[in-house]
Length: 368
Ligand code: NAD
Image (cartoon, rainbow, N blue to C red; front, side, top):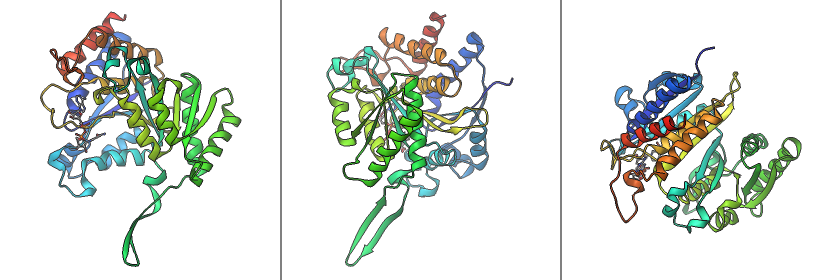
């Protein structure tokens, strides 16, 4: 059987720097665990615009559709700020998400003990936190029609439409229940069924999918505003949270910051299963291209490394190897290694991007 294929789109700014560390780790898995991938590299974002006049060529799009998984660094930068909207670097990323129909965005919020002091919340509220937010990514108010700014009488009116079909809700609910079965077996669904019809439908469909297909999983419902409060009051009550595109946008950022730095946060966006049973999948750090530190060896590669760990778990059925990589990251942090973004007010001497990657590899070696 041929090796699974991985398309790497390092992108702009710190993207290539953090991806270089992931590539070292991929090579480690090939050498030490006989876990090999067919790797191909391509361009997305500003670098693709520079080379081809578009942030994502049709050829690269086709490669992404055919790959077993896509791993992306980051896109964007001040050089491209004044480009026309249609060719901005972010359009490349949006096109990937849309054409691959990646409807379930997985954002883990995990607090490594060594970084618990970094949270704006009390240490005992966040230490050991491990929750997963599943955000619907391809529908809802960011896509619904009608939308636009119209004139009504003497003034303008801005309109966006929250719209969800039953099947759109059901498929993302299934993603959440499947994930919960591999974790703490609990799902909390969040909407505003008290004031929105789309919320009423959301709640009904999630409940139906649960009752018919996943009654072994514990399900609760919460209004999204109450959910935001509960996330800051006692986030450890949650395991998997499933919610719509808009609420998920807000709640996943809130949950992420419970855990400290942007440089630590991975994500996965999953779509329908392909013929080989693997979901269409794009893995990427939550952070952007960080132009303020690009090219200086200061970027924290952990978010990108943990994104690869998610790929091992969700695309390649290598849960034990994903655990190994996450534990290696945990060990490096427990040993006190910090990139500049993880330095507290007391200061210290930060390590470089590549030194952090090397330390993770040393911890992987030690795990054998
Ligand atoms: P950003 O995430 O790039 O940076 C925000 C702050 O966090 C910066 O101070 C940066 O130095 C720091 N930071 C981010 N990642 C880090 C890491 N791995 N290690 C250490 N520090 C890190 O967000 P921004 O400054 O708002 O945006 C910069 C560019 O990135 C813009 O062009 C924006 O459109 C783009 N962007 C892209 C994505 C993506 O590719 N998914 C996401 C967000 C922003």
